[in-house]
Length: 400
Ligand SMILES: Cc1ncc(COP(=O)(O)O)c(C=O)c1O
Image 1: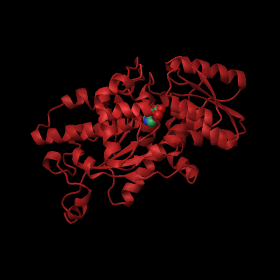
Image 2: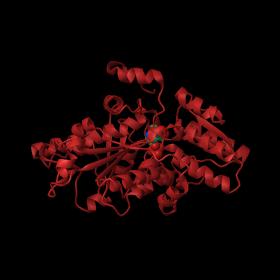
Image 3: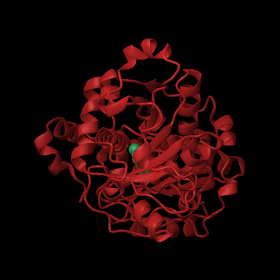
Image 4: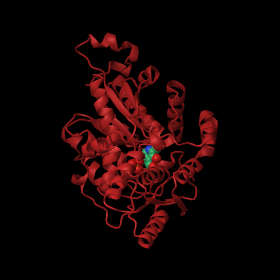
């Protein structure tokens, strides 16, 4: 659901390269990380873009800053946002930087860390229900009262373009390192990030995948139905991935560009969280760790399929990746199960680790498959960190 009175559903208005130029020097160019253990587990080379280290603690800073900066330049004195948390923090920080007033509408069960960060940045925080509809109604009322525009968390061309710059940086850095991406994986809430990724890969043979928590799969359902389709979001520890519906603009962008959607459960998100913490010393929030969980699901399945030599095992698409007739990838006649297939990975998906790169470099006949993952955020409560670190306790952390 969009919180804009008239969402601008025109993909042509989303310019990731322009956003990248504008944001250059205004946001952190976050590092790209690698872990031999994660490479081994995935059976492919995995490059992780650490947006948990971004200003404001998430990649939402990119879209928020770009959108608010333009509104400031256009003479607006204030902005309104509704969000599960990270977009609110980003808009609050962006408004402060540009001297604008900010009001952010958050759910009553928003994580305290995100509420506190928005307040500390100087925003007025208003609470409204637990669902998007409640927040949208309140945001619209405040916008009508104040005359300040709403910066939607994903149904906004500048927000989508800004989020896309995280993917663009990862793509470019992978190319510079001589390990260009074959696939790019992002977690999906309203779809702004994954839509930006679909535009960022333009002209390159990179397959983009979205990741949704089980029961929060509006994008997968929307793609299957051919139009934005709401769900009643299930409980999940990934609080940022619970909008009831993918945005109209993100949907218009991804519908013919996205390779597929992977559904992940809380257990696999928690597993990815622990991997990031223990192998990379990186603190991701569950919504960010979901991207790695999805990448591991994809590569794990593909490796298993290749091991079995069973190219027809389309059950992959039932549970994990969703295929969409008519999308760009299918027109090229490829299938998700080939993720590791022709491309690069030794049979069985048992690729080596980062240390074996040198040995591989001499093998001109084979190039390792490379998957990029945007670790979208790191704003997580201390008690949830404790629960996630103790696997048997994660259920207590699920958002209702
Ligand atoms: C950390 C994190 N990752 C991913 C998302 C989903 O982003 P989008 O709404 O652009 O799909 C969010 C949304 O709040 C988030 O906070």
